[in-house]
Image (cartoon, rainbow, N blue to C red; front, side):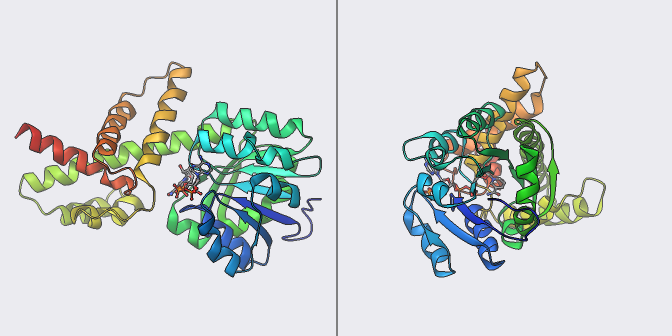
Length: 301
Ligand SMILES: NC(=O)c1ccc[n+]([C@@H]2O[C@H](COP(=O)([O-])OP(=O)(O)OC[C@H]3O[C@@H](n4cnc5c(N)ncnc54)[C@H](OP(=O)(O)O)[C@@H]3O)[C@@H](O)[C@H]2O)c1
């Protein structure tokens, strides 16, 4: 059983060991938690097993052997498959257990998984994160949670190992919605920043100086200072894959559509990310969206 009063108690499962999941699980292990891992590509479990994690061969087995199971999957399709598919986590859930989905999905997906988990008698919390690879490594993520309040209280010690802050937003779907709004803003910011970098260069300015100027004013954002210098060098080391940023914009546009909210800036940004994907940049960092604009200017030159 989960126990909120005993710190770090209980067996913790972790499904999905990608850019984000691996360092998050690693922080749990380093904090002394009893962690069991699974990943579709088994080789990614190796480094965590070396650190002391146990391994089970399916999401079902992980869930059956743990009190609370975290999942950090790529998108709605994989989140549903790992939770509700064959040998999925749902098959191993039951009363007294909890499932925490950290993946960035849409509200319909969060509600669907919630329904399947709750039907087993277990509790469900959606908990997508704001923050990227480095904050995941440093335990500095921001959790945007919604769902069962008692599960939120139980897993708070784990969230506090992996993150620096947490928000409880009420009904399932609100966590996904908050995350999508945040990433919709971020995607548009990066697209706009890309235009600025290219324009500054074309009119004879040094884009590195633009990065410096931006960093000192009211539109300063850590993202610009972090990504700007490498974007100027056309380097895009992956922290947040471009394909995931485009997925988030797509889902955010769907969310906006569902309530007839106009989002023309996000819609335009989404087109740029789609172009970048078509150039084979899906697995590069999302800052590679600047390449879509470079190609455009070449085309029209
Ligand atoms: N990176 C960031 O900065 C960041 C920040 C906040 C939120 N997020 C969100 O967090 C989630 C994970 O991001 P990430 O950057 O860690 O992505 P990632 O490196 O691409 O990892 C994706 C994970 O999902 C698994 N997966 C994909 N398709 C699957 C399927 N059909 N069945 C089973 N497993 C599947 C992958 O397994 P394999 O190893 O077998 O491919 C991997 O473990 C995404 O929803 C993303 O939008 C990312």
